[in-house]
Amino acid sequence: MVSPSPPPIRGGWGNYRETLDIQLVPVAVETAKAAMGMFTAGLPIIRRGPGGEVHADVPVMYMNFAIDRIHYDPYSKRPSPKGRPVRAWGIEINPQEVQQIINNVLKEAYIIEAAEFRDPEDAWAIPIAWNGLIIMHVKVSYDGKEIIPDYGLTEEVRRYVI
Image (cartoon, rainbow, N blue to C red; front, side):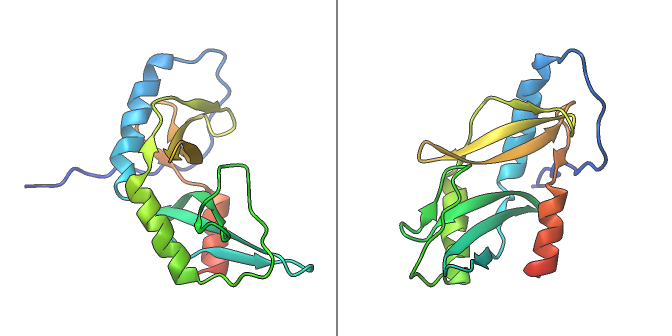
């Protein structure tokens, strides 16, 4: 049996649209679902602050590109909701343990069949949830056919992690 081809990755920026074809949302959702089985947790990006605090984000990788970051809560050893990065004090973070935890989370995560629209990228943002929390988004091109990486995060991963 031949496995299906993964959705391609798009580069570049789009143009402003006065109207949106919302019938493209289900196409974008299906593209995100097709790619999701290939998402893996990268090594966490761990930062230490001047007050002794530590913060960890885990890049979610697809075909060697970062798609989004998942905030990691070192107190509970699970993801934190999107928009809530956790700063922790007095805790050591084991990068391999965090990566394994997030890989397990990705196996349980699911697509929410809805979309936001991101004007600068001319793209749909499809939310991914785990245990009822939105933990990340997948950007999909306006036509719903291509995954759009987070290029800034991809560069950060290449600079600090690889």
